Length: 291
Image (cartoon, rainbow, N blue to C red; front, side, top):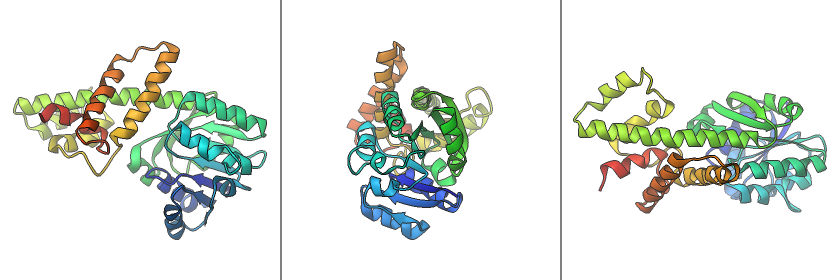
């Protein structure tokens, strides 16, 4: 059992912190910008609610962050009330936020100055993966820090791997999002084509999902796409556009060409313009079946 702080109780962080308390058996303190959400979590899982990141992190062996973007991470990590101000030497800061690799390297340097370990550890698996404790965690950092953090991360991990040095986890998450963007657009086009051709979509999927076209997106999103129902579940378009912006920014820096990702990002902008900011990413289908 370890003393753990979890900062950020959104749709991912709330169940992740819950697994630390229930499955991991850890002593968990939580912080959330909206205090009511933290109070709700404590009623459900026990532990303690802290009024600031600093107080949540005080005395913790591990501090996990899962917030929105680079600016959110900095607001939680830095400053007089930030997590780093409360962390003890030898503790480890783990950032589950999907953020930039530049920020991961920045945090690693800031932590080293204080004698604190750091692991950038974005996750994949969506809300369902977080709720079921079946997330894929891609990590960057020092091997010794990763090995210390891994038993704690196992509370909500299906797989957890150290990819490389600081920032490697975030770069791997970018690869993940680049691949998903193309997959979802391809699936949307295939299903829209099948509809136009008058095919039975259920029979089509039953066959092609057992062959080379199979993917997680196909298995888990084809029914929503076929029914043209995109809200109330999944990974929001707003979040995907945030992630793709990170990918495209990094590509400009390293010289990678991302023509499909850039195009799909613009398709998502069209979905947003149709009122789909909180629709699931499979809503690319909307552009193909609705005028």
